[in-house]
Every structure is written in structure tokens, then in C-alpha cells.
Length: 149
Image 1 (cartoon, rainbow, N blue to C red):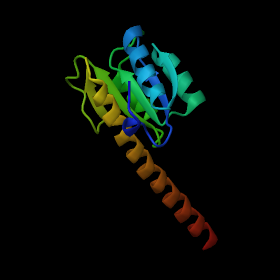
Image 2 (image 1 turned 90 degrees about the horizontal axis):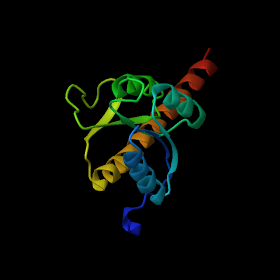
Image 3 (image 1 turned 180 degrees about the vertical axis):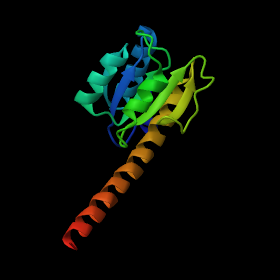
């Protein structure tokens, strides 16, 4: 399905929040073929939060409309409290959802092409690397400040 040129160099922990079984299965297969560790699918906000707490995902793909009536935007905001989690919203009707707000890194319109998922995975890897570097810098500055006291 995928060639070696398309595979990720680094494995991510990926959370799938999707209540449509075929879409969830497609995402899981695509991401596992790339060598990522996939958690889910979760169909409700409560399931997603429990899986996120257990797996500490680097990347989360979230359906906009969840089985329990919660919105993907609300869940994205909660998951984005962890700066190392990159949140992508999947929606057939993404009106009113904007990238860069409420912790949403990208919005992908359904139906999507696999290439759109692959592109966001590679961008998420870069985003994670930047976030990790910023966290290291913050930790270093805090350690330096505490030794100066």
C-alpha cells in the first residue's frame, strides 16, 4: 500500500476518535502501516479522554461530531492542554472550525484522501519536535533560574 519513501522515520502515539467504523479502520490501517502506535478508536468524548490519559498521544485525529453529542472542537481544546499532543479534526462539515484555534493544528474535510493524512502526520512530527525543543528550553531555563537563587 505504501512505499518506503512514504513511511515515517519516527513512530508516533496516535489517538483515533471516530464513531464511523470504516473511517476509523482506514485511519488505523494507514497509520499502523506507517509504523505508528494507534490507540482507539474512541467513539465518545469520555472514551477519548480515558485513552488519551493512558496513551499520552503525540497526535490525535478527532471526528467533529461524536457519538455522545460532544464536539470534536471541545475535545480538541481539552487534549491540546498537553503541548506535545497535535490535534487534527476530521469533518464533512468543517464550517466554524479553524486551524490554530482551540488547540486545532489542522482540519481535514471528509471524505479525505490518504495523502492528506500522510501529509499531516509528517507535519505533526515536525510540530512535535518543535514542542519538545521548547519544553526542553523551558526546563533548562527553570533549572538555571533555580540554581541562581
